Length: 495
Image (tube, rainbow, N blue to C red):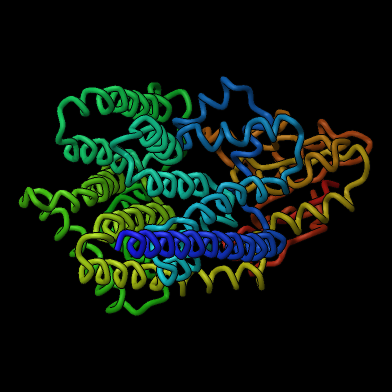
């Protein structure tokens, strides 16, 4: 009898080992497919102002200048710190897409090799907006956010034993975007609620909690505007009120399910919120439902998100959708992880919910990805290519004090170092956009300023709108008008 039991156990272990090896190879294969698709989309993507701005700042600015700009742009330092060494080493602007791809590919592999999630859920999620296009191809801090979210998911089951690494990942997540601060605070609350043994709590949770609280305080210090008069965005208050309205919040939340009908949007969002509040209520009311306390971070994250959007600073629809999708994605994962070995029916329900949620974002993600492949995302690359090949040696290029000027400048600055880059509005050498209030000068003032400092190569003026230059300048180039982000460029040769 003993030999029979031992033989069954050995066969079971061999089968589990074989399945694990097969799962690892499948995870590697899917990660390679994802990387290939990602690289293909990178070659078809034209980078725009939000991508270029951080690169130009970390390349041309000092550490002190970078830190002073964090309150202005409203983002903590992790994305800036990640790009800083590569920009300072002189890598070309095109490498930004590769640098964004690295954390996303790592996140995909970690998620694909996770044993807590079934393969149908993994495959559907791989095509969702969590991993595809906006967080991946468009190089912004969200690629690091996804990596930190996936790391927190991997650390979830052993968060009580390894609280330090769990809290470090939470701190780093909060340093990718201010919106995640409430979510990370919720992770701390859940960690305390989930501890039953006081000795264990004192041994592991207290140091980790101190680390997480200090990390969140440092995040606030990074983005806090101590002196609003020193450097601030030229925000029109009427526009700001439109951005922070309840209608804007509703539209941003529903944009998660973009390209679906309005009825489907409300049904999907209602289903998601009902799931969140049901499991959270169970966690608070029912002491036996400790496994549902995984929803506490999501509830804190959503509450903080609403507070930010309504009362603190404007957030674009794309940012709202990206952050909310990641928070809900984490919540559904943790429910799956907690229920996997407990209640099969509820596990199936949670799996179906995760598949529905992920699948509902696939349509707008794939549609926008295909649009980016077929149409220019921005006119920046087209304008830069023209200027790289056509501007005479020693030419003076006047740029506007606008964020839209960053992308063409970033594309060509390393390739045409003989060109002198000049801020035509502030009448000084161009370095990076400083978000300072600056009145747009007249066409005559621009032409006069550029003529005064032009060298043998002549003076050119790159504008983001078509202008009436008359006899002062000649339009020599204009980019295509059908760009996704409506970034068009007009190059004038000053006479």
